[in-house]
Image (cartoon, rainbow, N blue to C red; front, side):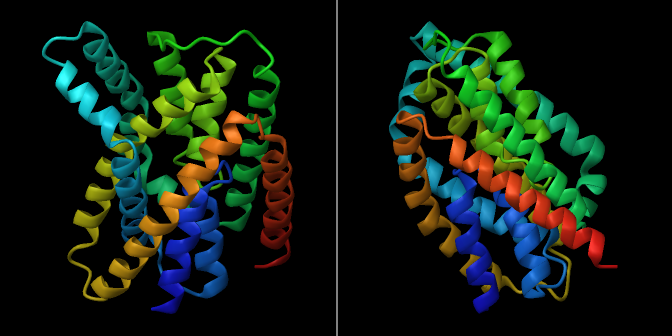
Length: 258
């Protein structure tokens, strides 16, 4: 039970910091000896962080819901979120089994961390460009493609999507808002599917998953606030360095162990 709580805390703290929660979850599961963390545990902790997003962005969600009937801007934003969700839905349906297997490979996780480091470096450079507030269709598609790429362990969803938004010329706050709201259908749908697939597993420990969920929810609330504060100050470089070092360590571990 303690191990599941630790994995939940790791998920919550890393989901919205650009350091790849999936990569930390995979490495943590391998190091702590949690058998077959896979989709069931992944779903539980992602649902916990999803709850944190829903709580902290409830005003944005309420505003979009109320504006659907009378505000063309709200309808347009919802359509952009739908467009951005398409890539991850297609990738998840077509490559789900392949992606799940990558969680058991330290080398695959290490390569993902190095990819995150590269994306964050690009995002840091892009912050020097003129930045826009409004999201357009091209922005939504590029950010959505980055979110699809983040299904690989080690690729940070928040890092990839925010960096993609920055490269497209969006302001950090606009890129982060779109990234967080885009995570709701993506994480919710993937988690529900994973839990449905794991429901018939006789070895599934629902109390352990509940502990992981609650730990991820609480630490996720803190991580979102911290990420927003750091993003406003343009702090991405240290995260890129951290991911690069962790990626090299994971690659070395995977190379030296059978």
